Amino acid sequence: MPDTRPRRTFAVISHPDAGKSTLTEALALHARVITEAGAVHGKGDRRATVSDWMAMEKARGISITSAALQFVYDGHVINLVDTPGHSDFSEDTYRVLSAVDSAVMLVDAGKGLEPQTLKLFRVCALRGIPVITVINKWDRPGLSPLGLMDDIEKQIKLRPTPLTWPVGEAGDFRGVLDRRTGEFIKYTRTAGGATRAPEVRMDADDVEEADRLPWSEAVDGHELLQLDDYDHDQERFLAGETTPVMFASALQNFGVAQLLDLLLDLAPSPSPTEGIDGSIRKVEDDFSAFVFKVQSGMNSAHRDRLAYARVVSGSFERGMVVTHGTTGRPFATKFAQAMFGREATSVETAEPGDIIGLVNAGSLRVGDTMYVGDPIAYPPVPSFAPEHFKTCSAADISKFKQFRKGIEQLDQEGVVQVLRSDLRGDQSPVLAAVGPLQFEVVEDRMKNEFNSPIRLSSLPYSAARLTDAAGADELRGVRNTEVLQRSDGTYLALFVDKWTAGYVGREHPGVMLEELPAGGS
Ligand code: GDP
Image 1 (cartoon, rainbow, N blue to C red):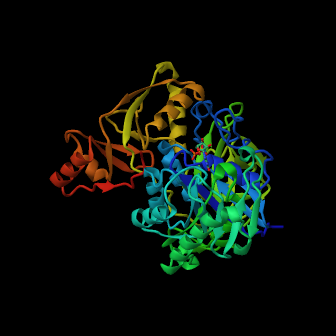
Image 2 (cartoon, rainbow, N blue to C red):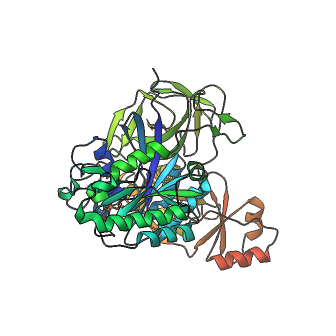
Image 3 (cartoon, rainbow, N blue to C red):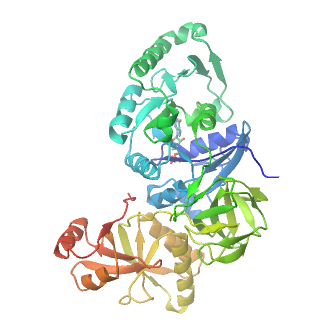
């Protein structure tokens, strides 16, 4: 029997430190997946997290992996797709965004819009992903709520439509005014936010004396917003013109239940998806899914390789034989898992919107489609402009076999982009990264997972442009420029800086030099 409960598949995104891990934990807590906050994404002296699987990640306290957390809330199946926290892994974040129907953007009330906030908003706009904005850390002193709305409108060009409005300024969080009902949702603090924060809903008449002043200020704010038409409009939200806003304190669990309710009320459910050829796959059609992430080394004992796929249409059942779009070959899905961090549970069935992890799916690459019935191919998961380049070689040449295998694996996973040229040969390919931390992951995994320590040496390039075979020919020998090839066959021209790229472009007007979307730090 297919599970027909409605789905919400979303990601929480933010500039690092805005509170993504804390919110994820709070959401899971509300869903009663875990009983005590701290078990999912603990940091610092809290318990080690389920999602921190790499020793390096633990040391740094950042999330490098992406996974999905599934839980049931009010009759809905919620899929929260985890994204990496550090800006160096933004490429990974962008891939995750190709697998969700909506995003929750966290903004630090004290810091306002930060560089990664702006970039991520842009990517969501590019991909047509509706965004709900959560102004977080309202329990701490911060900016004015109207000022924040102004920044969102001016810098992001999205009209903010607050659904709640804070009662009490940042640092004096009494609760929120529910703009849809006019009620006061009053919060009570709990120790360390470790249990569900009790929320009391009351009519305006019942607001206690002590809260009267901040309440009347909130009412004024609400009325101002109303006059200027900053009210929620579902159509404009789905069209990417507005962003519903709410105020929260993830640490205190304030606003977390409201966020879940908003997701149920406003966020879109899985919808028909267009293939490259323009054909439409409806959710109830035959099974299809696409791979948005490939990962290995999750389990040091088994060296499992996992391909994460989002189900687009049809029902998935474990053991089902599907066609692998790229090769046209049948593919038996014997081992499908639901993954969140280190905890893997076997998946028996999955529905559109769900994320499945396919174990030891050696042939699956990022962007691949799987299907049953009529063939379908979904548009490729976007890749971003690398800005850091290093040559890479085996530190111990007797380990060359391991070296080649490791580099190929990391390339397939998209940990870095691997670039080659005849000139450089197979012994020392060029690694291209959006953020420099990606190199550390490669070094770490090559040494510990593939038993082939590597030597990296920096190249003076910082800009890449897409070119073609003719461009590669024409640019051969041009100073401060080098053309290399990715494993998918595309050519990248590397330049010391973007001005050189511009100059070379003007000197060689016939050469294709196309900019890639900027993603990095
Ligand atoms: P991430 O990098 O976005 O995952 O951010 P974290 O969840 O790790 O949070 C960064 C820091 O901000 C941590 O010290 C959190 O305890 C703190 N933090 C997160 N949410 C809140 C909040 O609502 N209020 C306050 N005061 N601190 C918060």
